[in-house]
Length: 167
Ligand SMILES: [Zn+2]
Image (cartoon, rainbow, N blue to C red; front, side):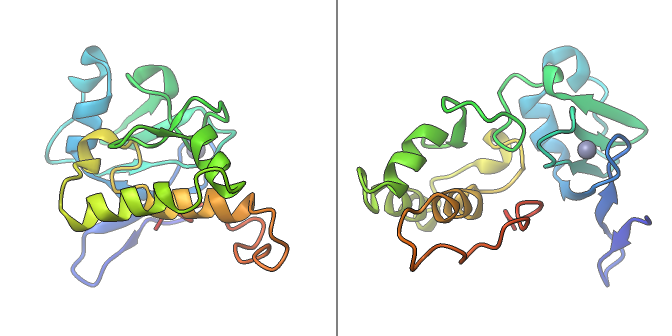
């Protein structure tokens, strides 16, 4: 699998050196902010870096000849850690468990409105907080819809669309 490029020539995706899944480009700043101090020293501003969102793969980032793993990060990675206490929204601190409670109706609409309001207001710095390098709304919405008990809404996010769904 070859890396794909934009019309402008910058690399958008690259296959994971571990699982061969397609990884999306992520800013070098995200790695510098979220990697522990020792691995962060390997990050070069001039290199392109990519985020692997495959849950079963231990590699999180690769680029510049280096691969960084879950234990190299200061934070748990939502896409790779099924624990309920892992943040789904890293800026506002909503956990997977809270998002699932919202999907079950306990917090109907609150989390979605809090996140989208914060994004509209420009108050997020997801690039520095969220391991996937951009805001969490797509990942949060997918999590909600996948667990939505309302059968009329079920199937809006087809099974297996999980990879890269956080576009
Ligand atoms: Zn991978």
